[in-house]
Image 1 (cartoon, helix red, strand yellow):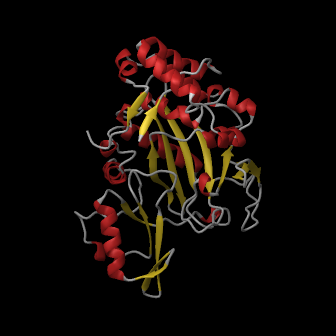
Image 2: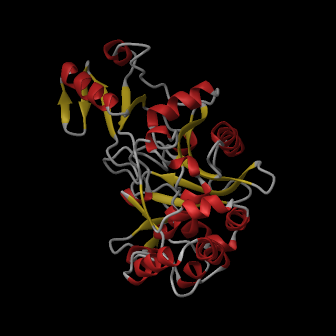
Length: 363
């Protein structure tokens, strides 16, 4: 995998100008030429899927998914190598969060217990590969009538143990499946709903919650709530109420659906439970993970026992945040903080950034 940084002929908003001007100022002529060729090849800016998802006004002030990675890599130097990145290495994340006293799902740890004993205490589990995103590879197993079943049907105990240990050996995590808060059960029937909280260090280095989005399962077979997996996303207003609900249509264009497509439950206007506690948890988490990370997208599970930290993302998606807010990132508090941090980056950080950078897993 690689990080690409492009230099287009013109910048559409103040955020892109702050990013690209920094590159132009600190890069050699050769590096600028490579970045211009990347832009000319169509490897930067808005993908066709984003053009369908976001209106012209949002994109005019927005940050594309293609451009965000190069920018986030500047702001989050702790991202690579991924083995040492606690926001990408899921086992490292679980250990770091637990050590910081943050509420996280009960997870299997080979050094603490054997897999058979751990499974004996569980009824539903989630297995996640490491170094993946957007819910890729996440599977659920449930104990039914004394036997385990997954998406493909029943699985023998020894086969399940072998599969889980193989996942663990390559950095994956195995966790107890968290229950959904009662107030959200009819709004997210297929998976745990999570509140995406984007936190960013402010002008004095204190974490600030700058953007919120509630993600809900549409009720499909996958145990994830990611928007790209066909699920729902919505804004949360200042009073904690659900805003308009969005789902991607067959052509990728957003469809508004204020009722849940499977249960028929009204969503817009409903109160999000434990919102203040969930945001406070994200802010605590950023304090624990702040070394090397200016901006983090947190996924906070909303459970009957209160908010639980599911994971953090060093390269949080910009598409759904801009969709639910109806504003481009440059026209937001988060965008203003991005500009602030870009203006204060040390020259060495800019100079070390390449037009084409490898994404190393190991140092």
